Length: 70
View 1 (cartoon, rainbow, N blue to C red):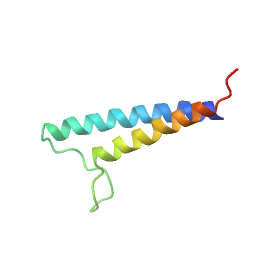
View 2: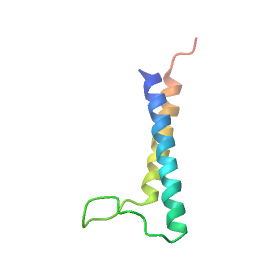
View 3: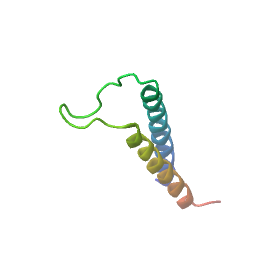
View 4: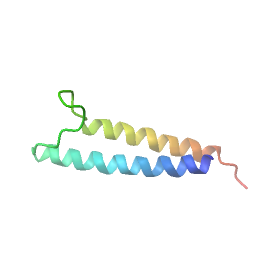
């Protein structure tokens, strides 16, 4: 089970990192990014994806540490 969490956390962290970098580049070029979030609410920032990436990478590391080594 820990191997699945480790792999899933890694891939989700990688996806969040790519999305955060894309949104950051769009923000740096001063283009209007598509509104992510509820209509009339706050938009999801690239920082949300960076924090999500850190969380998922830490999940992958913690799950990998719990895998029994043979």
